[in-house]
Length: 475
Ligand code: ADP
Ligand code: LRH
Image 1 (cartoon, rainbow, N blue to C red):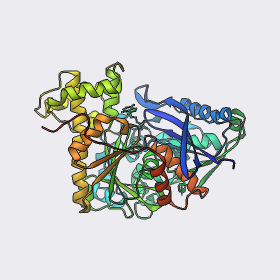
Image 2: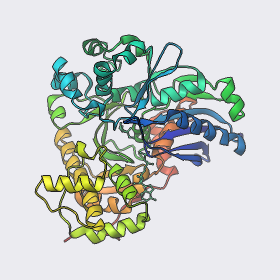
Image 3: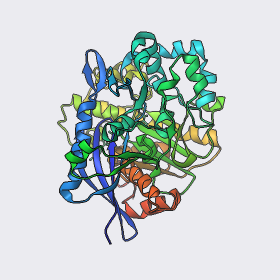
Image 4: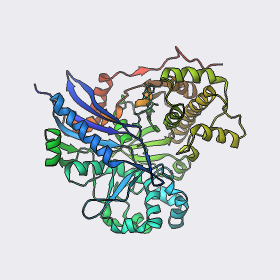
């Protein structure tokens, strides 16, 4: 039987990859066919994504399917959340694709709260307060570059813009739209009243489509470049939405960590919790596949380690970093890994040192101390979040499923087990792409529903229980 191939294009803040997926003997198989780097560039003082380069990489990767003679039935793109571009009436980008780490949002929370207070804002959308949320970026444009919003006809988030370049069709998608903090948590549509209150133009926000909806066929010029045509469909275009679809369990009482540039730690729920208690705990209710909500916390995550590795000029392998961190385990200073000072510092090492100084703790002096301090602070934060989830839900959780690139970090997995005192399961590494492929397979009815899909994912990919055979942290 001819196999149905599906292509996931998953672009994270640190790298993008094209992954083909198909079913074989009742299991899902995947193969990475292309990978490229991603990072923010400083363009005239603003931190921006290079959309032309990203689009070129997207097309080059699609072309690899022709070389392999594996033509996908459909293609789905997911990326990190929050970021967007504005387009004029001719479909041209207005300004740059400024990234979420840019500081143009500084002070914008206060400005927004002059219009709607924090409590009322949360009660409408249930989205965790983070200064990087789209609402604050749009409000900064409104105050400082109003001409862009005046000229804008369309608001597209990053995957939607890439879809538009591939197909000529503009469609907004629900899961990623929820990361803007502008979608009503109950009715799952743009919060038109809130947009009016903020003076943001209604006309730029299009109808919200759902995962599994079609975008369109590749444009002829793209077809010529890649050597075939295919249908572009919507997965959960927010990468975290795709990743959580691929958490390898059907146990409702499981906690997940989607571990990459960010650590997204939480649970899945069927009803959003926009209560004051939930706001005070700073949990978010992101929109998921098929009316599910991801009740989670955004934690600064492995971005801190990425930045430190860069400052170390990438001179150590991961194994060497684990060894160095383990040597530093006597070092007890702990930083708050949700603090905005770690969002885009010039030097992560200095940011950690300053934070320690500011909290009257010894500063890490050596590489070993610095590494352990960051790892330990991150895992300790996971431990605190578990307690908060248990406090808010009244449930007791036994298992934590770590998915994404960061699940390969054996040192962090061990520390996570130590600080949470839960069973830790690691894998799959490519959960986001698997979730993306899963949405495409649900569309063609390879699976009846997400429960069946998760069952198949569980038996298709290696998931390792983390045990204490290395890196002992007990006293
Ligand atoms: P994103 O999609 O957010 O860019 P990924 O899911 O690709 O992130 O995860 C990237 C992170 O995974 C890296 O920053 C690194 O911390 C971790 N990682 C990748 N490869 C390894 C490895 N071989 N060992 C340990 N950690 C790894
Ligand atoms: C992870 C992620 C996360 C946040 C952040 C901006 O890649 O999508 O869920 O939205 O990026």
